[in-house]
Length: 354
Image (tube, one colour):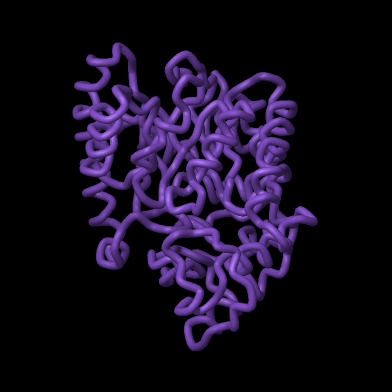
């Protein structure tokens, strides 16, 4: 399978490891993926959650930790692949996080959970690549048009996320209730985006790769994405069940033990639907709420006065191993995971060497 060129960078394997917070994808996982020739991604979402400074000043802890994680990931990668940072567009101080990642030498910044309309501003005069996570041709076209008009530049690559993805969804509840029909619409959007981006490829004189995300489990899924005209895939959930994943072993084991019917869609405190593994915590929150004793002020859309629980704390509890009292994001194929592999083994399964 061919490599993917992203501006002046080369991925030997057309795999982006999805950015998963809080603490699920940090330097160990991202570095291992890059070492195998893919793009490893560190999630900036509360990346400093285990810092002694975190409770007193979350942003300071995160902004101190992020450059350290980028450096460690690059050391692990042995100068292979790329190291990117995923920063949600709804993050408070989004620009500060983007600038910090750029100054620390991140090869790319990937942003979703909204449209990162100002992202080019934070990477100007640098070699950091930029990409938006979108769920439709309309959103992809809007992003490319906005960046072209305001900044005179194009996306270096695009990530198009299907309704099979884990975590927060770029769809309303209606498409999520009929996944197969929604996915047919999504696949047609991918095909159309391949055509739409040609205008910008001609203008800027280079290819703009598309990576399909959401529900990618094996090599067949990769081939399906490529058949739509995509250049590669982004994989999140599958990388959790790897030895190098930064989460606690108890967290990884939940994915190995999960059944196909164990996922569900909930309404997140940030006002978006989210796909999660049904556990004791989710059951409690369906019928009640927890007292929020501390607000991390992490997301613009979260209102602690109305939220049923603190999403940061719920994700932190889970990634540390308290899997009955935390929130666990997953994609629709979580029930197919049966073992914990090394990153090298998983990369080979997704894209066999030729």
